[in-house]
Image 1 (cartoon, one colour):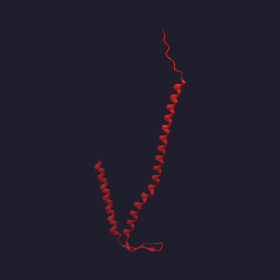
Image 2 (cartoon, rainbow, N blue to C red; image 1 turned 30 degrees about the vertical axis):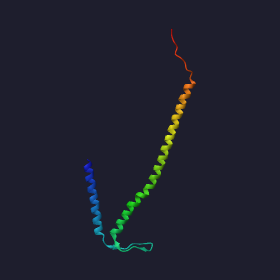
Image 3 (cartoon, rainbow, N blue to C red; image 1 turned 30 degrees about the horizontal axis):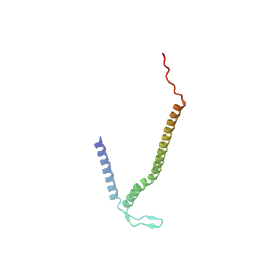
Image 4 (cartoon, rainbow, N blue to C red; image 1 turned 120 degrees about the horizontal axis):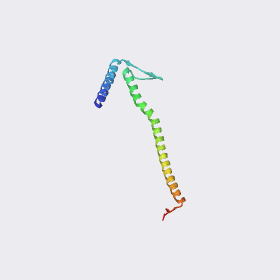
Length: 113
C-alpha cells in the first residue's frame, strides 16, 4: 500500500513537471509588463507566469502562518489555565476531605458482650 502511494505521488509529480516544461516551451514569446508606469524588460511570458506562481507558493503559506500562530498561542495559554484550575480543584478537594474528617467525631465500634 505504501509503495502504491509513493508510485502515485511520483506519477503526479512527473505529470506536473512535464506540464510545466510544455507550458514553458509553448509560451516563449517575449512580453513586456507595465504596472503603474513601471516597465519590465522583455522576457518570455512563461517566466512571468511561473514567477507569479512561485511567489504565490511562498506568500500563501506565510499569510496563513500568522492566524495559525495566534491560535497556537491561545491554545497554549488555555492549557496553562486548565492545568492551574485542575491543581486548584485538587487542593480544594484535599482540604475538603481533611475538613470532613476533622468535623466527624471519631467513634469506636460498639463491643457486644
